[in-house]
Length: 229
Image (cartoon, rainbow, N blue to C red; front, top):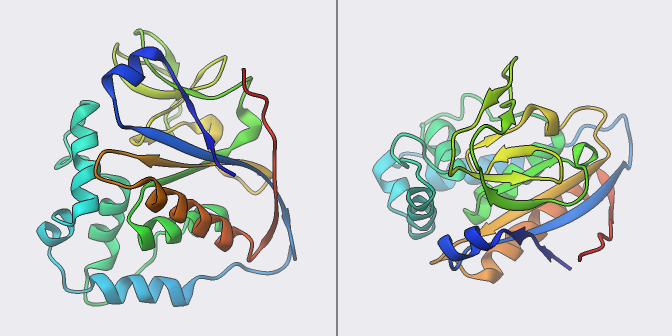
């Protein structure tokens, strides 16, 4: 059901025990006028984390596993917490749920699943992809336009990126690219989940399944077959 995303030999060697699983999906709205809501799920997440300190959130075993992964790819998890930890600490430890991290129904569905399972999930518009996707390290100088940025930047050497056959799509687990963002015109997506040491494969796949279930509330999701060399 899930495809394992290819990695360069260098990534496989340096990040032993890390695997990325994905679903390539075509989405058709069930009712274009309906609004996809997750109030019950947001409230449940808030109830679980309300009143916790940032330190208590960070000490959860799954959070710690992804912090270790961040360190392995050269990121400081105290300065740049993994995405699930960051969302919980920003929105859900407060006594009152003052606002929600709402972006787009597709992204919101995936974020709910990630927050429930404590596994960072990624979703992006697959129409931007040329060829196949894979994980690799930058050689240095690759152009990349980060989400929300108006200009391209040249990436330094040795950064872990998700790329296609033509370009860098994201700094993996750190920053998405402008070209792949979910928009109202998005119809085909990649949904990704990352397994790291200390996190069981089933936990990651269960989180992906939950994301698919939430997407099914508002979309008819058809799995797209990708030829693999």
